[in-house]
Image (cartoon, rainbow, N blue to C red; front, top):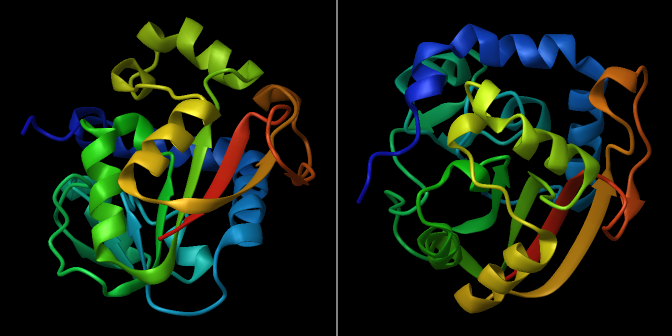
Amino acid sequence: MKMARIEPFEKYPSRYEDWFNRNKFVYETELQAIRKLLPKNGKGIEIGVGSGRFAAPLGVKLGVEPSRKMREFAQKRGIEVVDGVAEKLPFEGNIFDFVLMVTTICFVDDIDASFREAYRVLLPGGSLIIGFIDKNSNLGKIYQEHKAKSVFYKIATFYSITEVVSYLKKAGFKDFEFVQTIFHNLTEIKSIEPVKKGYGEGSFVVVKAIK
């Protein structure tokens, strides 16, 4: 297996953190969208927990993260973090009620293996919740155009909703539910954006799929 794509996160952890401070309303909006589909209770884990920016406010206490610098940030936010990658989770099968992945799929080496692993560790009836930037959205197009200039997105692979759903189905998931948000360019967002059902308008989409 190739090395996890962690280099920029190891090199520029403060730049990563700074993005959330500069884009406060975008961040709050994304949290709000995830909350709509995240189960209110049960045992959960965030895969690619990063610095814990999502897990901490969402009350997810456990995370998997291959970047040591990111793990240190997440631990300071009170998250128990295990070193590991999405494609080979260090857990037994059938143990979690939900698995969360936020802007993680664009950094995994093998999306098929990542979804198979999420499926494996979930209890029957458990849910996988994925937050990501839709490749076909305005923001997705901007990110792809300027990819070479971004220390983080240079190594990213963007996906459309159709692609994500087809990978999820292949892994065995069913009963999909969607919400969307981020309807403006990031620089124009001066307050929390609305969250709507479905997809096709908003740049940030959250999909929930059931095992």
